[in-house]
Length: 144
Image (cartoon, rainbow, N blue to C red; front, side):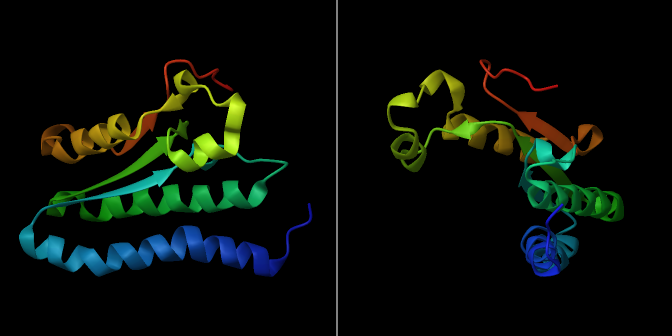
């Protein structure tokens, strides 16, 4: 496998260190308020390795581990931390342009629907928090 130390360092800085920095910036205020929600967006790569794109998978594994660790450290203090696996292509103008004639709306997720799912996650009562959520369009051909 051809991965340089610089590439893996860049990946971990982007996926894990960046997420940690963001969390550390908001957690103190949330603790003061005894409530708050942190949602990390991710992908199936957080659950399995890849022989063709290992850096992506390594970064998402790290992000999921950070999310779980923060959830375990702070849930009893009122902070809801969740990892959302987006197994979808989002229906946004850049994707439509990039895909051109191959774009099929039924194979994408509507961003308003995705946002509604995030809002639902945020509004969950503390007695029934989800720490993992998977979103995909009904038409997706599951890969496992």
